[in-house]
Image (cartoon, rainbow, N blue to C red; front, side):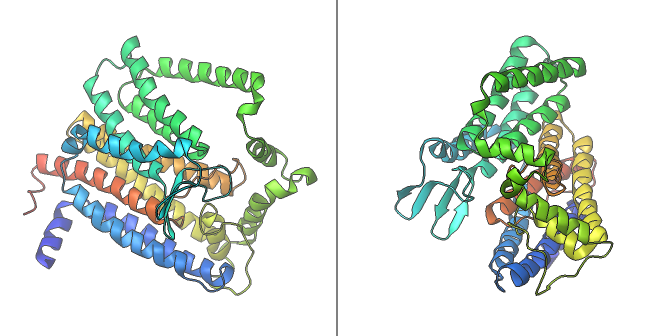
Length: 388
């Protein structure tokens, strides 16, 4: 077994996997501190994160040994499973089916995108995100060199917009934005013309502004208030809606260079510090240096993902790795923007770090896809043999 493990690590992208494991190790440490200081000494969040991370690493290794081309060709199977789990949450709200609750609102914000199984929750959109990357990569690979033809481009836009609309109907606009961001970057990777893309983005921006002006009710009341809270954080009328971000900004600002320290009995209380706002808690406890360490780790993971995309032996592998990079990139940008009070709160987690078993496992499945692309490239160059 140990011989097989050593053989695998010599052939796989071990530094890439190590960067991911370091992210998870730091996450578990910080979640233990959150449990000590803000959850009455409970280590439940950290324990779930540790188990999910260990399971995720094992699944990443397994997926990396599977040919990503076979996974892409099997798109009808995983698409039916993933979206078959998502679609019921579009119409059902907290519906009990045996020991499962469908359309569970885990955050109390009209986001009915979860399943609750016993004491555990699962968000099917995370699985759908992986399927979306595989199916869009397969679609783009089929129309290689012809992406900018009107009919092909229209079909690709429909391929992107349908999942975005489905997730929006769920009430999870943060994840919908991530899906849209993945689609944009994968279109560029697939050969979309830059002038055409800029023109399309301009039209989309103008169209969105006109639509909101004509139908302001498209934004829920709390969503509009969250936007105002970023623009006017000191407005007394927005004190309740801005409270979370104000506390996060205070925590980051008082962290200093080296932080206030982990496992304090009395630390700045940050609502939801274990999930969307774990970065602000970490910056308070470990300071500017700790925050930069997190950014360096995440940058390393994303850079290594792009490196794998560039080394891919085919367009399909390049597109899959680009899609995983896009998912990581947009989640990091949106989450850290929320923590720094430059973007409104829209419920996007920080990859590897935010507490959540299903999201951690799905991130590692994405890592496994990238490693599969990398293993194929190394074999093609004679640097790796099939693992027996």
